[in-house]
Amino acid sequence: MLARIINDGILQDDLRTVLILGSVMVGFSLLAFISGVLNSFYAGHAGQSTGFDLRNAMFKKIQRSS
Image (cartoon, rainbow, N blue to C red):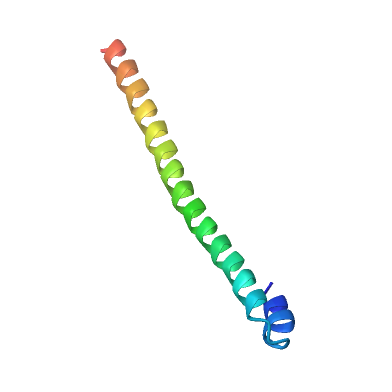
């Protein structure tokens, strides 16, 4: 994508191409950022939920045996 900006936009003095392709690159960056944040949130939630379920199961088992 960067090669197209240079070859088709800058070298050809086509500001429109530079702006369009640059905007696409910024859009992809924002999409990657948002995806990373959501991934971290859901991974943390899954880990916390698993730990919670394991602790509850262990507590119930210990309570039954005593």
